[in-house]
Image (cartoon, rainbow, N blue to C red; front, side, top):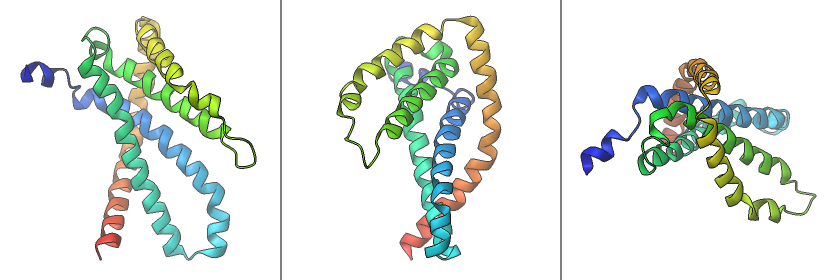
Length: 179
């Protein structure tokens, strides 16, 4: 039983492209929001304070990326092997990109001056089930598999920047909170 469980966990080479896509979407979204706020930070904060805010942002992005990638790993373990594990990179990238795309859409609809979009939140479980169904169906199309796999492999290059920046940021946050 335990042997079967461990065989269904994707390898690091399968996880890297999925994590790279999740990381790219999350980090770019956060950096965009950070850049919008940067002019006000420059007026009211020191460079050191801005650096600390940036470090906290990178650590939160690291944790968010890991949580997001955990969803396809769980699906790979609990669903039948042919449904998800056999095409983990393709289906994981589709799941992560569509799921994060939907969450970005929700975030854009939450505006302070407007009423809260309760119906959008209420229908979220239905949309996530539709996204899962789309992932399972689209993952069967060979042409789409090649495109998604090729694009996700290209995203891995962003890991060479994000992992060191996140590691340094994690050290800054840990040192700041320990000392």
